[in-house]
Length: 362
View 1 (cartoon, rainbow, N blue to C red):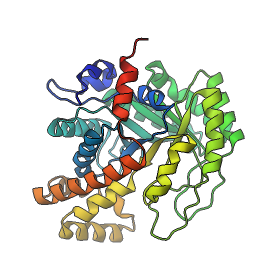
View 2 (view 1 turned 90 degrees about the vertical axis):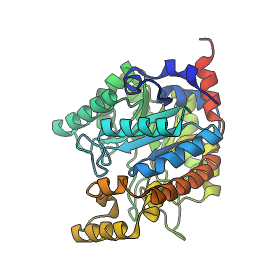
View 3 (view 1 turned 180 degrees about the vertical axis):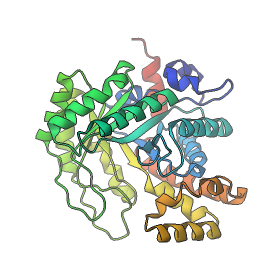
View 4 (view 1 turned 60 degrees about the horizontal axis):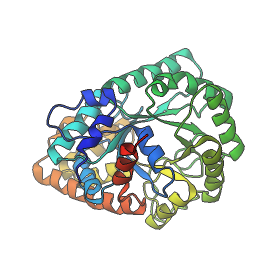
């Protein structure tokens, strides 16, 4: 299905990155989240650390007519390229080039994930502000400001301050309450009261987030086979109902890699409308890379005492230039995984829903 008419809804900064003849159709995250808010479906947001998976994800999205988001967190793609070697400009150009090559014209979101502010120092806040400015200039259409490391009054103050240019452009906005921990750590689950307090403070400052990320028991990283999954969907639903009724917002779910498909399939019934999948795409890419290259990446990570994900940047040139047979293998694996996830997210047909909402008379 062609979406040429939607090109007029491409936000200005994103439109400037699309050369003539490129079918890419990045759309405003706010338009997507609001169009799908009343539907029990989830936008899959893919953290793209290794771009070799992008063609497969795009092929699955086009086949299923599913809106998809491509994202990088601050740690993955800051002004210096994070640990992926992609700064905002490189990331957007990578996506636009991939869309052209794949003739991918299905609506998609370009999201700045986890623009973190871990404390209240001026340096920390100004660093986040500079990243948002760079993402806006590059053509991002949605942003997640994560000041959840701070107490709620500071969280709200910092978020409202940083959200100014995003709200001015009416782009997608995600905020967070309750820090989502890494594997093996205990964390306080977000409560209805905490969610309401943050949203009320933001509303008083003139900020209207589309999505709220909460700590509902998920974790960042990879759920391993047999590992206990303690996602509190009942609490998630309680928070969602208040968010939806009072603020018109929905839930963003972080930490999905390794979650059984049958459980993911329930998420949409509890108000989750955006779900982040990151490590899963890295795993797929790693499984398809040349064994000799992966061996050197593992040796580098072991020698540096770091997680394997940090090997992405120093080996980026080699990863991007793998022989066609390996790239094709990764694309195929990403396509097959993306189809399963889109279906579990109940995302098939969402592109048509968004197109209909954007094209409807005001």
